[in-house]
Length: 135
Image (tube, rainbow, N blue to C red):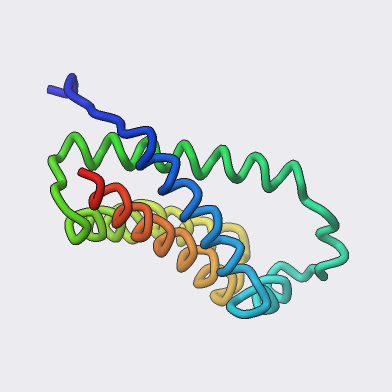
């Protein structure tokens, strides 16, 4: 029965901030920022100041953290390792496979797919560690 869920708002907030900040690192010049810009055929100047996109991305990250937290609570995760595995399974099995379908139909390069999917899977793993560690 899907009637018992616990939501730790502090854990969800921390997981959201960790996931969002990880995105800044992932798409920075220190990691995949230049490769990502090349893969989407844009320059940093063309992106401008994407304030609205960043705000909405934070909201989307928060929704992801809430849903992952509910799922982790529902299946009874008890530590960081189990949280990591749930994040990995959700990321690789649900998100990356969905992005792979986008890659196949949208004409993405393999480089773009790997950057996008790598970020999403890694973010879910990090969030899973945070949320699992809080249980």
